[in-house]
Every structure is written in structure tokens, then in C-alpha cells.
Length: 488
Ligand code: NAD
Image 1: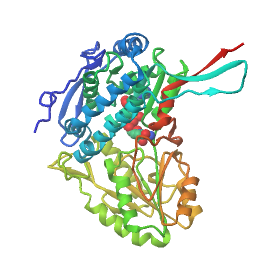
Image 2 (image 1 turned 60 degrees about the vertical axis):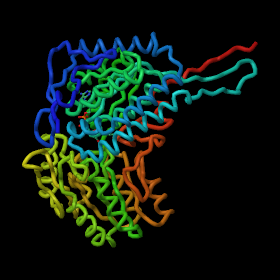
Image 3 (image 1 turned 90 degrees about the horizontal axis):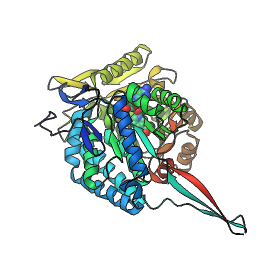
Image 4 (image 1 turned 90 degrees about the vertical axis):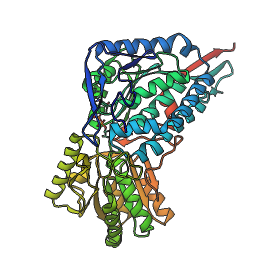
């Protein structure tokens, strides 16, 4: 099985104006397969001159030429074609995503890539469906609004769902006629480059989509400051988001921020405990727990604590790390050795602060190699402990207990984050009351980690602002113009 850039026929230069071009810096950086420690590819590293070139090309595409002149439905057809191409190549894209990120091939090829294709198709169909309105306030004038693209969008994305997270930005932005400059995370740049080529094949004119891999504090920061970029759409850590907000202030850029989370997964005593246990496992171990929406805090009503934990621990112990390329694997390698060290540090902290380790807790290897970590469950966690407050971004579950509904909501809301939450209960009224009281952008009831391209996703509190997907995403990548027509 091939695992090098040459074997995989990967293109590793920058993708600018419809072509792969070397960076002017001449620098390259390695991207590593975290399941083996082997270098997968040496990718061109963009510098300021490369970014300037990408932005100039994007501006040109946005302002003149075929992309600027294209009818919305034509744009939509390109996205629909790209969706079909991506779906037909889900295995090839999924394989590269797995090699680069360490996630199970089951997730990347069977879930992430089809979801990315579905997102493209959804926004392809939306390209001519962002309506303005008319205002009936006057008899002496005809008043209306139209929505126009914001211009050049700078997308800065994380490593956990490299192509899918990017797609939530690329698809709505392109649907409306914006041009996009994408900076993927440096540990997982490969599928973004593949996707540039796919979009060109689908008919996207040169310049409308550019990919400039490079270090966040250099290329990402320069994007946030760049006068040729009209909007930054960022997904990543809350602290990085704050730095980008500061950098974007100089040019009064529009920004949207999808940031971190510490989401509560709340199980009431009247829940279906088998379903809740299964949901708790999916909530924290899907994507190796490297998930912004991970249900990393399991909040259990005291009266069912023992019964639920028996089921959760039994399931967790069966989640053994495996070769990410094996279709049966459900727990892959963490994205890097560095991330694994961070996770191990949090586990040590949990133990030293008095939480009880009831499953996992150790580094693991598959075939003697790789940045694997066991599926880990802590019990007896208190809200003030570090592992209940900070985003670990790994397969580590912190279990806390609560007494009643008020207690559950108050513990649930006791973090700086507000990205997602879930409630498990057979009492519809209680579940909806809790869902309303939880300060989170998404609340699942009797489910976890389910997504639809039409349902918006984004944060409350320090989990960010702005919404991805659905009609709200179209608003994020457009601006309103008011038009007054004199009738006198
Ligand atoms: P990160 O913040 O380290 O990096 C994200 C991106 O920002 C990368 O492309 C990085 O190169 C770039 N970057 C880094 N420093 C920068 C700077 N100073 N200026 C501009 N860009 C910079 O995040 P990560 O480690 O790649 O991803 C994990 C984080 O992302 C977690 O906190 C997770 O919760 C969050 N996340 C959020 C969502 C969401 O939708 N809310 C989704 C996925 C991940």
C-alpha cells in the first residue's frame, strides 16, 4: 500500500490561479503520517509574496473575468459537479485524509468525504436562493435590498476535519460568487491541495480558489492583516481566534469564528441508558476526541451513576486503537506526537487533581508505532478540575454527577465555552427546557454528533460567533445593499 507523496501522486506545491506553483520562499515543510511517524510529503510553504500573489489572483477573479460574470446557477452547477467528483473519489480523498490526520478510514472515506460532498451539493443548489426583500414603507419610493458577496474570503482551518471544515466555508462562499484563499492547518494540508485541482476540473475559473499552506503565525496572521482580503472565516482554538481578531482589526475585516468547546453531555435518570451510553462513547471517541463539539463532559444524574458508568466503561474498554487504514478501526492515531503529549499531560493532571481513572489513560502503539492513545474515562470529576474546564482535544472523557435539572444546567453552563451540548431523557418537556437553558450553539436531544448541511453550527460565548451551514452561512458570506428608487 502506497504512503508517500510520489506513490499517492500528490501535488505538494501551492495552488494559485488554477495551477500548482512552487513557493517563492523555496521552503518546504514535512507532513507526517501520525500512525507510523513517516513523512508523507514535503509541502511548499507560502510566504508573504506568495500570499500577495494569491490574494491578487483572487481579487481579479472576484472583480473581473469569467467568475465575476458567471450567473449564480452556473456557479451552482460547478459546485454540484464538484460534489459528484468528490463523492466518486471519496475513497482516494479519504485515504489521504487518514494518512495525514490519523483518523479511521471508516470516518474519512465513509463519513467526512460524503458529508463534504453533500455540503457542496447543498450550497450548489443554494447559489441563486439568497433573496433580498422589498420594503412597503413609502408611496414616493420603491425600497429594496439585495445581497452581494463580500469579496475575497480568507479561510483559515484546523487539522481535525481538514477538508470537511474547509468545505463549510468554501461551499457557501463560492456559491455566492466570492473568491476564497484557503490556508489549511500545517499538519494536514494535503486534501485541500487535492481539492483545488478537483474544483478546477469541475470548471471553477482560475483564481476563485487558492490554497496557501504555511505556518499560522506567518501566513494566517498575514491573511488577517491583508488589505486585499475582505473577510476571515476562522476555525480553530479560541486563543488563536483572539489573535486573529486583533490582527483583523486594522482593516476592519468581517470575521467569523468557530472556536473551541467543552461540551456537556447530560444524562437524566429517565433516559434510555443503553442509548445514552452508546451516545456518550460516540460523543467523545468519534474523531479520537479531536472534535470541537466533543461531548467531553459526561454529566450523569446521581441516581443512575453506577448503572450508566458500568455500560460506558465496558464500551470504552472495547474501543482499542487500531490501524487507521483498517476499515474496522474506530479509534485512530492522534494527529501528532505533540498532540498526544498534550493529552497525556491532561490525563496526568486529572489524576493528580483527584479524578478517578476508570478506563484507558495510557499512550498506545499499533504495530509498534504511532501517536495512539487509549480510550480514556475519568469518573469523580469536579467542575473546578482542569479536565472539566479545559479543552483536551483527545479521547478523554470527564464524568461529573448532578442532582436535578437546575444543577445539570448550571454545571453544563459552567465553562467559558458554548459550542454544543446534549440532553438524554424520555421526558420531552424536561429535555426541551434543558436544551433552552443550555448556553450552546447546538443542543442534541437523545443524540450526539449529528449534522446536516441545512442546520447551522456555531458557538455561544468563547466558542465564537457566526454560523456555518444552512441559510445562515449564506448570510455570513454576503452583505446587504439597500436601494432606494425615487417614484416621484
Ligand atoms: P489552531 O488554532 O492551532 O489552528 C487553526 C488554524 O489557525 C491553522 O490553520 C493554524 O495554522 C492557524 N493559525 C495558528 N496561529 C495563527 C495566527 N496567529 N494567526 C492566524 N492563523 C493562525 O487550531 P487547531 O489546533 O488546528 O485545531 C483545533 C482547535 O480547533 C480546537 O480548539 C477546536 O475546538 C477548534 N475547532 C473548532 C471547530 C468549530 O467549528 N467550532 C471545529 C474544529 C476545530
